[in-house]
Image (cartoon, rainbow, N blue to C red):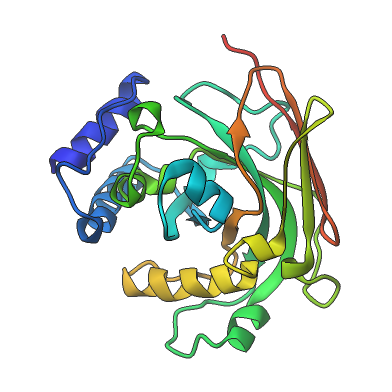
Length: 254
């Protein structure tokens, strides 16, 4: 599949490629993502969850798209325990703040009511997602980003674990600073109206494409505000009311 090969070559060489929308439509993009996912699994990667992308109107405006998408999280994308976010392997990284959910139950049935989805969340944590694009200059449509595993890169989970009895995701107010300066602000309601609504959308969509959500998995529910470029050596901190703070330092270019 030429679209998959183009994206794989960009990831291998570290050189962004031309968009793949000339090769596929949006309906084919998840098939391309699945080809790339299977290739990573065959190489020894392990799935630990999913990410929801393009949930924020601000990010949709930044990228010129108008609907959410999702991608797969692999174990080697979790850099929460690293002393610094590694830049090796990233092409055009940006960072955004969001709420991550850790699931206590599978979400693979047809009965995915809001109550069922909420009950499946063991706890939530504040998170930083380092998004990236193998497409040159982030020149993407919805087909490009879906095929490119929803423009995924890395993620950092905070240490604060909050149950949904103690905080409402839609009520969270987010402020993200870079080197002490406010760089992005937003709210839980900016994420499809409620991060739990984003989780419900993902549960339905992932089930439909054959990768249902499983107990123990992490779900990055989507940006609460605009993404900002990830700069070498930067110190990033994001606070979400009710959910705590997540911080990370970016590594230097080698």
